[in-house]
Amino acid sequence: MSDMSNWSGTGRLGKDPEVRKLPNGDDVCNFRIAVNGFRKDDLATWIGVSLFGKSCAVARYLHRGSRIAVTGRLSVREYERRDGTKGTDVEVRANDVTLLDAKGSGGGDTGTHRQRGEDAGFADDGPQEEFGGGGSTDDIPFRHWDMP
Image 1 (cartoon, rainbow, N blue to C red):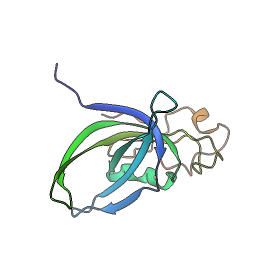
Image 2: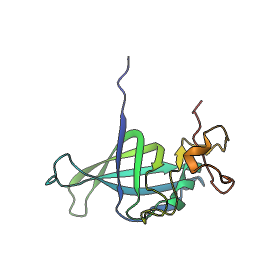
Image 3: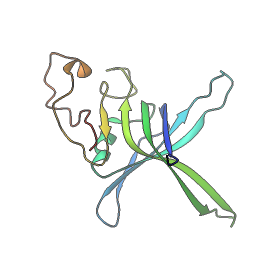
Image 4: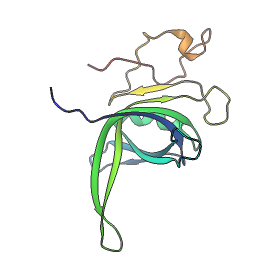
């Protein structure tokens, strides 16, 4: 069995996500989430999160304060600070982002939405109750789907 670099956690966005184009034309979405400790007096840990390609579609539902769950693989990047010292940044390259805010709670403008993988497959095979039931889900740009 090989070692795996998998991370899952929940937290709140510190600011609105930034979406930009890479030189190859693909989208990349970056944001940081604050993950609280177990005790009340624990300081929050800030985790960088990156989404790529069509997964960036979820960014329009993310806002400062949005509560989300993230699953992905850890990525380590070394860099040089302005003072010349070396630093290391650990971030999550997300393959699953789920909005946890209740509809109308102020943190986000929608209920539970989910985005997985590089392709935002719009399959209509999930339960209607996930999106409040009863109404049309035509305006929801993504639903849960299984990765190949």
